[in-house]
Image 1: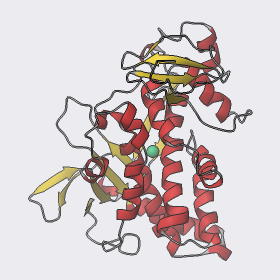
Image 2: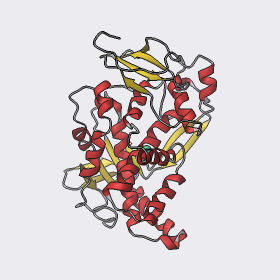
Image 3: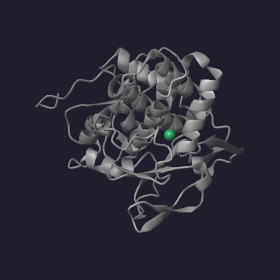
Image 4: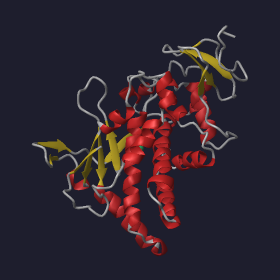
Amino acid sequence: MEIYDLTRGKYSLIYEPEYDYNWGMEYMSHLGSEFRSVFAKPDIDVSKLLNSITIFLVESSMANEFVAVPDCQCSIRVPEDKSYSLINDFDIEDWANSKEGIKDDPRERTPKGFTITDLLGVYIYFGEHYLIPRRIFIWMDKIADYAKKYAKNNTNTQDKRNVQTLFDLVLYHELAHALMDVGLYGVHPAPNFSYANDYPYRFIEEAYANGIALTIIMDNSHYLSSAQKTFVKNFVKSQGNGYPEGWEIYELVINDPDVNLDQWMALKVLFNYELALVLRDWWEGKEFDDLWFYKTVGRKGKIAVRDHCRKWGIMELPSQKMVTGFKKYDDFWPFDENGL
Ligand SMILES: [Zn+2]
């Protein structure tokens, strides 16, 4: 992992260059192995992909400036520390019930305005046809400010480790976006949904990114005190638009090691209105105890996909055509050698 500190050591309390992030990277590269066996090119080395992403530590005062990169005869333009997404009246149930869902393109929906997210970090890619490498920027001053404010309001839980933990959370959160960047694996996300316009799709990204980051930092790479864990929880719960659900995903994982996080990566490829409804039901806290969206059936080019009525159908890959339709079967077991 290549980290360039453009603040030149100003936040040495937050980021220690000697700290070993390899364990977390290893953990991440194992996530999605099932996803890759079904969807992506078989020869993909995820650790290598993740390690190819350059990380820049910056301050918000550097927004839109070209800043010299240490140990490199070059400079890089630091992005804005905010992200803008469209607000619209997208209602997934109306949309699904209208049966127009398959044809609907979020890019054609009229936005009502913008919502602004104040970023602590960002994962940037420019699409497959650009040669600009993928990057992560992390705003160190904002991480420091959040921890400082938190310490002020919670005098009993002051802890200088909080700020390091928040940095780790942001770092792994952004790397989790890279893990979910299915374009990186040579597969392409569902064309009818966009991160900016659709809450369900944003939910997949942000909740899952937080879920992965929390799974790494809470129990494994650091030994956090209960006050530090409360700090992390309060932070995650204070975020909007799908981020707080990352806490639910983390709890699902610690309570049931069999919860298959790979499922979420497949959602990025398979996403359609039936799966959007599965996600909505779970998100709204309806009776949904697990997060299974697809499973392999032992046949190349075919998978079983589950709808929101908990019924399964068979889908053909890579065309994503439903062979049987949804709402079809109660369950699926792998086909045997006779195709039964
Ligand atoms: Zn994010």
